[in-house]
Length: 203
Length: 243
Image (cartoon, rainbow over all chains, first blue to last red; front, top):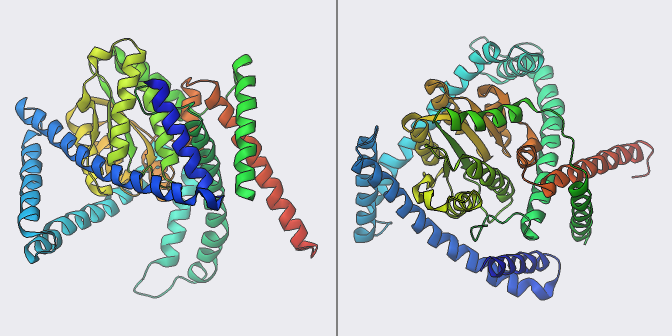
């Protein structure tokens, strides 16, 4: 069974890869990718069942935070029922989306700003090294260069230092990191393609 | 065709260097975060706490899948080493197919350790389907499940700040690496030891995942030098008016 799953995975990966380079493999690539999208949809359903199983288990054991698990399950089942009965385009479902889901995500985003500010303040306490100081100084320079201040722009910061840091240093660094990530992705992908790493089939 | 040539050359290099690394094991430079991770692995078994490995929400159907696969390779080793613990590792993901692979990988780790019967399917979880719902679910694990360390490996964006904040509040160390630039910056500011850029893909080699992982690092170094030479050559050619 292990060998069969590996052969299927490797053959599928190779065919999809070849589809990017040779026209004759484009049709099979399209078909396989369509299958992958359908399977990803099914996986979403399995993921939801997994979520239900985890939280049901928590409620059954009366674990710490099980009230939140109960709320999550009520929300999940309620939304699913409303969606199936009314259809996702129904105005009531839109109210649910605009009134609950989007504000909750926006609240988390707002919380993020506070968390980041707090992390920046703690940075020097945790890591008082050169890179920590450079990181914090860069953040201060960027804030001074881009923030809307009551007395207008800070001289030199918005016109000279901010663009110099963002366009040369930060952009160069970001590209370097992204090249590194791309190379890492390439070698990791090849390991999976050749079946050296097999995160499937229980190997 | 250039891309196919690069892929073929990389595959060839990877194959040759893997064979070479099997004979002579790699010498790796010290990365403080990974030394710490190695220690945390041992400590979690001794003090009866669990590790939480969060693999982000990178889809396996696009380029973000690379970081997810790197995270899965790490999860495989951690699962194998911590499977006999009273409190086995918990893994979370924000993408359903990745969640499925998380469960499969955990099971494989248990199987390799010879204790497949101890595997509990709910230790691999999909905590949410959007970045923030995923983070909210993963924060819950940190706060309520006796976690001794959070290991964040994969495609994690700004929501990493929420995970790091939850860890900080519980006094749980964070070791994180993301392929997302914002996520990396946040993890650098929030974590004690940050992994930057391609170090995300080095975790497997440092935890002893095998010769192919060590070979991958060498191949990445070779390719990086080629990119550097290409950039310098291009700049020189442009300066001399050849381009």
